[in-house]
Length: 218
Ligand code: DC
Image (tube, rainbow, N blue to C red; front, side):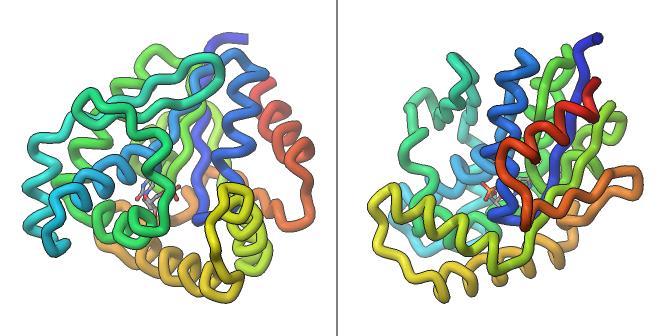
């Protein structure tokens, strides 16, 4: 089997990163978490301490150097050389990342980087616009989703394990708001590619979803 390019898209909390990471490990591929790149930009915007406006975001993205490093089956995220892996999944970053990801200059810079990372193949990339825009020629295209209730429950568990005091109803409302923002934005909105296969993971275990991905790669 040659080194494939695998694109996995879907809404927040569908479990993309969990299953993509395991599938990449099993395939010996590099996992590329594109959401982490938009989160890195959002993180740097917050670091300025200024009111978050589109103009500020565009200003920040001009200078930022975002780097994803995949080693020992783990993704490390760097902004201007600083390891910010542990700082990009906070509620504060999550709260502004859809606004950040909606802006053309941000997307242009991140998509360029993403295409370069996929050039040699052997990658599994997850995001919102991978099959439709970043890698339209990907060998395998999947669109992962799950009911909003199930996605909220998964995020709730994840945040609780990290020690955040979150409420399920609030998380569900946040996810719904992010779904709306990501799906309705003008540039590369979240949408299932015509040639992508839909996988509803609501009633599937992590292992089952991983196996479904691996089956498509055989
Ligand atoms: O997958 P995530 O929650 O880490 O993604 C963070 C945000 O980044 C999400 O709200 C939408 C945006 N995003 C995007 O617009 N395009 C991608 N390819 C990946 C993420």
